[in-house]
Structures are given as structure tokens and as C-alpha cells.
Length: 167
Image (cartoon, rainbow, N blue to C red; front, side):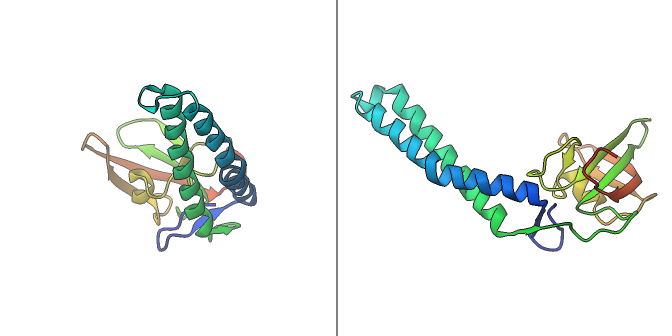
């Protein structure tokens, strides 16, 4: 369901794997054919230097090829099923609740690959917050650097295996 810290395995649920595989199959088959037809149709319109449709189609082709490479990389390193998890220990596949220091706000999210989707926010284990809390236990504090360069400290309130709903 998520990316592990020790290696580059991406844990995916069966649903996520099937969804990504279907997207890859579409893009690398019918998707490529459709964009090739758009490019050919735009070519037939004449001067390519001033052909907006041609340039837009070529840009779309680049995005499709980039997504194909991304999906191939994810699926090559994917393991389907649940990542190893221990109740109370923050790690991939866990629903985590943290409290921000100096604030009464608590946030609950799934620590998982961004390719997972569902009714709960997903934070990558490679994000600054995800990397800081990965491996910590309930009650531990972790500090990470915000994009503006300032530091933020959070306390881990809860860490439970993700059950498919916003627990």
C-alpha cells in the first residue's frame, strides 16, 4: 500500500495496482494511437511552425510518455498487499494522527504512496513530515523542515493499520 523506507518497494492495494495497470495499458495502447492520430491530423493542416494544434498534440504526447514511464516504474517495484505494520509504530500503511506543537490542531492521514486514493488524505513516506515520523512510536515527537525553512514539531497521537476508511 505504500513505499517502504529501507528499499524502493511500493506497496499497493490490489485496487490501486489494478487501476494503475489499467491506466498503463490504456496509455501505452489506445492512448498512443489516439495521440498519433491527433498529431497526423494537425500535420495535414500545413505549416508546423504556426500550427497550435500540432504543438499541443506533441506536448500531450510528451505528457503521456512521461506518465507511461512513471507507471512502469511504480508497477515494476510494486508489491500487492499490506506492508508490514505494527500497531502504535508509524510506518507505511498506517493511519496516523499527529498534533502540531503550539497548536490544538490534530491531523489524521494515511502514510502511503501518492498513488493510493481513498476517503483519507495521503502523505508520502518521502515527504518531509512522512520521513520525520516514519519509525516513530505513539507519544514520540518529530521535527521536520517546512518549505519556508522553518522547523515544525509534531507529536504522534495514534498509529493504526489502515482499514480502508477514515478511522
